[in-house]
Length: 106
Image (cartoon, rainbow, N blue to C red; front, side, top):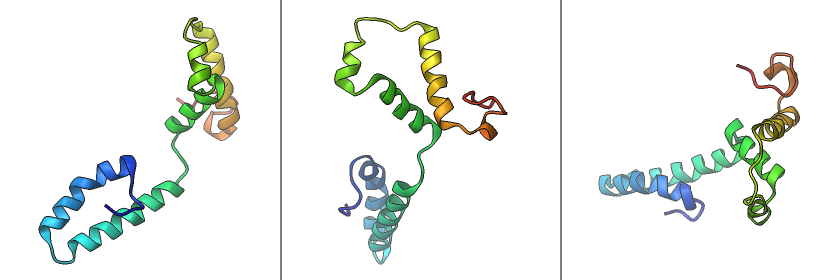
């Protein structure tokens, strides 16, 4: 496994690189070069809305230690909705929210 391909990416590339190794010839080198290049490109791409939303949840609730402080109480649906819309309001421009700042496009 190339050093630049690690963790989850390595798990995803491992079977493909094994097939390239079996194919032999230039395939092992080409597959490893492709893995390194594609993983590098993926790191440069802005994360999708789902990843940004998870980051916003972490911002609202803090790290794992702070989150455990909330374990003894349950947030009301209204509080969760308010926190999500507040995070979306910071993230979504009007053009993506159909003119209503902070509301997702349907």
